[in-house]
Image 1: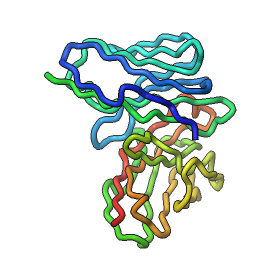
Image 2 (image 1 turned 120 degrees about the vertical axis):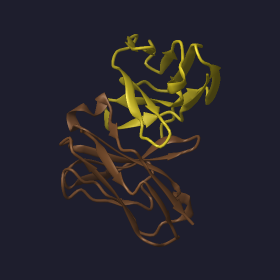
Image 3 (image 1 turned 180 degrees about the vertical axis):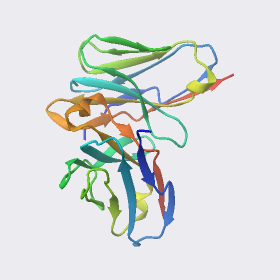
Length: 112
Length: 114
């Protein structure tokens, strides 16, 4: 099936640093979502993007829908220990309405 | 509280012993789906259901069955589990006309088949 390439696979950062991660695809999407998964829990929706070029923030998180519709970016500013978890991107197409395609995740570790 | 509830959270079983993982949502969602999560592969869709009595295969349906007799429940059935079905399973739901708004996920079921 469709693969989303998410990078980096993992990150080890110091508290207070900014973080960037991205997802790319060989084909276009109509919707990009970013989820966070904490240990022992299911993914929780952070940000949803619906238009090419759209930039949306949720607190210290900012995500962008790439102009080409084939990529998306998530930035976390001034990271804190509770940002630890796995971040997933997910893409959706209107003509394939019944599913999302998920990236393999970016595991974020924050050192206090 | 609006939620998707999966049971059990953890399960260890032996090859060939039929099992069912239950999923229930209290949000009146029409759409429900099962995903499995494996290291390096992200989340892959097993089956989905657009409404009661309407189910269809996802990307990795082999070895799984589902049923949707009631709107709130969407059990995942493994008739003859094999070790390659050891994985973390998630149930998800949404309104059928708002799938692109994203899912609500359950907390997951970690299945080990020995």
